[in-house]
Length: 254
Ligand SMILES: Nc1ncnc2c1ncn2[C@@H]1O[C@H](COP(=O)(O)OP(=O)(O)O)[C@@H](O)[C@H]1O
Ligand SMILES: N[C@@H](CCC(=O)OP(=O)(O)O)C(=O)O
Image (cartoon, rainbow, N blue to C red; front, side, top):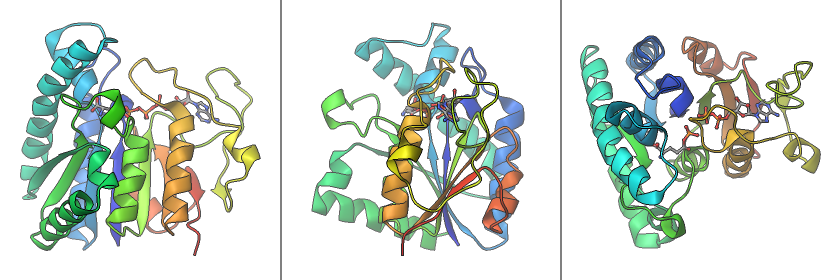
């Protein structure tokens, strides 16, 4: 299987922006094992701004210049971390930084696809993020849930897994509605399903469930199954790949 795994900031970092070593180490171990089992992996990783802020010891920035400065610090930290951890399992990582233009313009999209396909042939693990240190609002994809879905669509993936700080899509945001129930399977994304998704509460995350639903529309529309699952338990990835009922699965349209 070709699997795109999107990792949110809240999985990779603690609230203050410092690396969540336990989550990240377990995640890299599981991803390495899935690759050893023969799956092709593409990672879409957030965390540049949050980890940059953590390293610079500033609060999560709101203004564009500080966000861009934090991202350029954090992106180094992020890739250094992935490179170090994946190397321990003999895997090679490759950084790709993109903006919306790389999906909107045909020649740039072809270049991006060619690079991803060749990296997969060479056995490397592409790790993709927005090019936050140059991407202004007008040219940014804006959130990595959408980015993950675009990557899954154009890399012709079989599965997109979105790892978050929550077990899946609930009937309401469990942080404000403790009685909310998890939805196991979404066969069709109706307006009623769209209406369930609220924003983020984590202080580190960007889009909350709303951007995950946008991603689900893109992925399922391209025939790719998407699963939202909790990034604090990366070994769930084994069950997800086997099609077991973990998190919330959105069925790709065929
Ligand atoms: N219907 C819903 N079901 C589950 N979570 C929801 C829902 N609506 C809003 N949320 C919020 O979305 C958050 C996850 O998104 P986000 O904070 O952006 O994290 P990430 O960094 O993993 O993308 C949850 O912690 C929750 O507060
Ligand atoms: N590109 C940004 C993250 C954007 C984003 O969608 O963040 P998240 O909600 O944590 O997945 C970064 O690396 O900080």
